[in-house]
Amino acid sequence: MPSTPRVVVVTRPTELEMLLERHGTAGQAAFFLKSRGENLDEVRGRHERFAGVLTTLSQSIPVEWRRTHIKREDLARFVFEPEDIVVPVGQDGLVPNVAKYLEDQVVVGINPAPEQYEGLLVRNTVDRAKELLVRVADGEARLERRTMVEVSTDDGQKLLALNEAFVGHVSHQSARYRIRYRGKEERHSSSGLIVTTGTGATGWARSIQREREHRLDLPDPTAPELAFMVREAFPSLGFGTSITQGLIEGKEALEIVCEQESSAAVFGDGIEEDRLEPRWGQMLRVGVARRQLRLAVGST
Image (cartoon, rainbow, N blue to C red; front, side, top):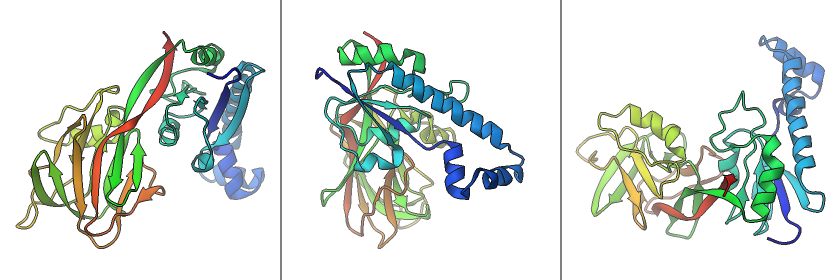
């Protein structure tokens, strides 16, 4: 690490900030909340508690270190340095938002409200921040490596995701494509498919799995493999249903050839705005990404 590490704090807007942006004034926000049986004071209280966590975090960063604070919506424009220590403060979902923009930087997730957020990825409370930051800088932190999924197109576009990648129709109507897996191929008409990591296996993938007669064993959070599941494949003369789930291991890839003229979409971690839009005949390769999330979870 350089002699003066840089800490990059990442947050998303609080409820209060979003309300004020939408309604303009606190009075209008209060009126809006009251009409829905809610109270602005409670929202303000959560905002102030979050601000207190950020203040404590700032005080935990050694004074000689560099620091910066960015909002989630600015991630795509921000230039990370190779040795940055990245500190998402918020819900678990903020970590996947950050992960796709990183190379090998260490992530220290801070849970600002343990009574409110589960903390599967934001493992640490702010009182541990100083110790963890110093241990990361000294190379003494215990790191958990999380597998990511990569979708690449035959014209060089790429998309990364920490939880899962979705391939299908932009509005979740029937998607048409050819799927190739371990030497077999068939045409599908389905509600699309997801390819999940072990990190994402507790979310959307688990919901799909529970509805299946034959359940696929999903990867563990740190497993170096992926699982794919086709949603509601429709059987007919032109479309098959034999390739609807499986594991993707090592250098294997699931290949998907788009067979719809428009509205095909590929997005990761539920962020539909940041997506690939394959055209008819374009091939996608889905496999284990070279990049991994490096998540600080304690001392070595």
